[in-house]
Image 1: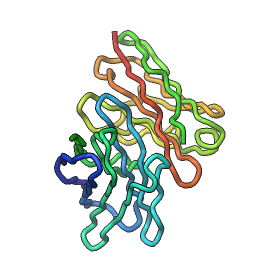
Image 2 (image 1 turned 180 degrees about the horizontal axis):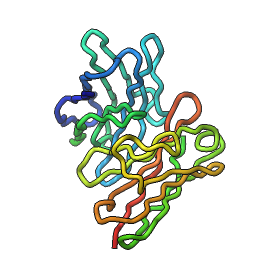
Image 3 (image 1 turned 90 degrees about the vertical axis):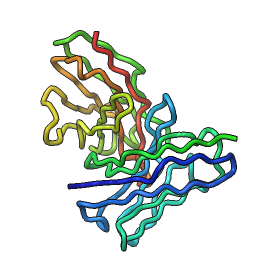
Image 4 (image 1 turned 60 degrees about the horizontal axis):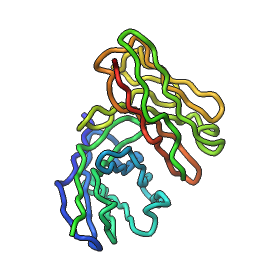
Length: 114
Length: 110
């Protein structure tokens, strides 16, 4: 069955970087679009970007463009989200998802606090 | 990339029908039949209930239906049940290979 398993919770200081992983199985990794979505406490879902099929460059939301890098390791079917220059406003649960098919990781809580 | 506009809250009594609107622009909702609806219960991962405007994934109740007119998509839930109480989010494909969510709607079953 389809699985997306994310790395554990992170606590970071403002200005630091965070890297979240999403290990996938049960579907064709190289031909799938995987999205990253975050949800701040008490807030709605926010699309951050997506990693496209092998060979294509990622697509990012304007809000995080310049601070975010989404990569994939096809040898381990794992995706990575790296977010730099963190501020408290980046405190959220981060999800990887096959948005089109409704498959979601369990979420990774990232807390940014001094 | 402005968020799609949804009402903050809607409510209905058991057995009634409710509709949640999702208004975008001619560049996103109005241009593509790629509108998705997600249901999210507190503390849970979002669940896909409608894809490509009108289609229901396997296992989703036929009480959920989707439609679109111009720049506005809608989710209708008929025969409201207590378990339908949740947050609902629309999502649309947008220009430049991006996607955008609505702000979310809290459904209360009275």
